[in-house]
Image (tube, rainbow, N blue to C red):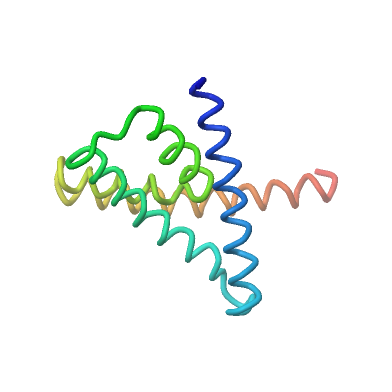
Length: 128
């Protein structure tokens, strides 16, 4: 199957799974905290770490399965899982400081980007 179709199929399933988890969390845990996002980030990080470790060290996942599950499904379910595994690999392979730099950069610069984007949107809305 075409690799882009595999990614698209996984992404469609992942996005719907994210929506279902978010809806469930809002209905059962309340909307005062982003429980749905927290759940998908933690579950996605766990599943990607498990899948890629098992898939490279014990089982030999096919490139197609990796595209469908890791890139498509989990990439759509949460991109946080990729960030978490990449940080873990940096920590392991390049040392603590590289891992922490990735963590701090993503969080602080990501937060700054969100604030900057919101500020720009408000400026555009106000007519500039």
